[in-house]
Amino acid sequence: MQSSDVKHRMIDGVVAVRNSFAWREANRHYRDSNDNSQARQRKSMATIGYLTTTLFDFGAIKSLKNEVDALGIRRPLLVTDPGVEAAGIVAKVLAQLDGVAVTVFAKTPANPTEEAVIEGVASYRRGNCDGVIALGGGSPIDLAKGVALAATHAEPLETYAAIRNGVGKITASVAPVIAIPTTAGTGSEVGRGALINLSNGSKLALISPHLIPKRAICDPELTLGLPPVLTAATGVDALTHCIETYLSPLVNPPAEAIALDGAYRAWHFIKRATENGSDREARWEMMMAALEGGMTFQKGLGAVHSLSHAAGALRQPTLHHGMLNGVFLPHILRFNADSVGKKYDKLREVFGLDAKADLAAAVSDLIKSLGLPLTLGQMGFEEKHIAETVKRALADHSNATTPRKASAEEFEALLRAAL
Ligand SMILES: [Zn+2]
Image 1: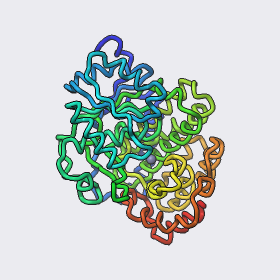
Image 2: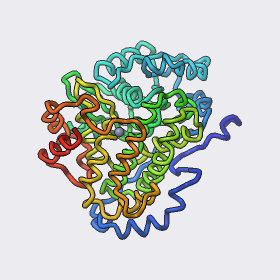
Image 3: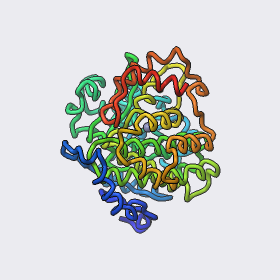
Image 4: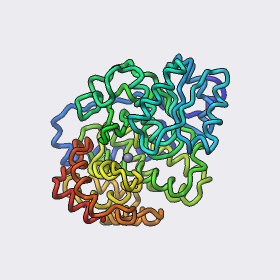
């Protein structure tokens, strides 16, 4: 490690956190977990895996060249989108790669598509590339994972979709990915999944430990210029990841501790980051919350994401994933209330709420204070979209880990209540 890197916080398997809520609460949380009715029903073996080496701090981007070299990448494909390029962030990254033959693919659409994966693979081949650098929000990072897979696996993309039993078909030959997030939200920089819209209109999840980026370079400096509405919406996505993975019934206490720590940071810093984008402390905390949300994906999400994925798959209107989560989260918290043991007590404590406070109402208040919509109607979603959204929500992979499974009728009622 060069001296310039010494100050970077290295996270490899163990999370080194400042003001660590997780540490402070560890003993009490352990006791509460053992009281928890979910935990008492333990029947399945725990599967716990932390794989991505993460470099985290202001200026972390300066270590990019070292990491490219360490992974033996000689000719990377840089996958990004036009917004990131226009913001000057691509130029900042390329400046770190002096002397490296980089091919730039800056055509990631708002939601990654199979067509874009095919185009990206063509660029990968033209540049004779041997690795991928993903730069941007969730879409470029997901697209980069799709390209890293499709460039090294022969079958059509759909073959590898989780819902088509494709998880086991994804092998270690996936091209190495270095992820550099420019928003604090998706956590895709350490996630094992990628959501891609296929040419046939369906939205499918590619899920495999081999899709987890080999490195995540989290530099809060890159988020300083993010506008308030995107800061709020992506931040709510991070908060939702932490809450939903915490509530998932899968057995994974380390992931739960990380989820609570991330929820604490997101809850206490999202407003500051939204109101003052140049608040460096708040930007650092939100990026850590997003990273921690991503580290807990292995526990699985829940019905908020089933609904957000479903409504987000509409061609028209195009709805923002984080905003959708903000609308659905209070409704699902009410829906799940009797299926989560004592976990809401813990969340109230983490958020600094009164022991008897209405958790769902407190979440609504936060969403409102951020200036985000509280109803689907405010976002342009209409009654005519309900049937299609229910169908998609029922088929979503997040239902597998939700604390209370919703029927078609219940999803419909939830959507009507959120309308
Ligand atoms: Zn999400």
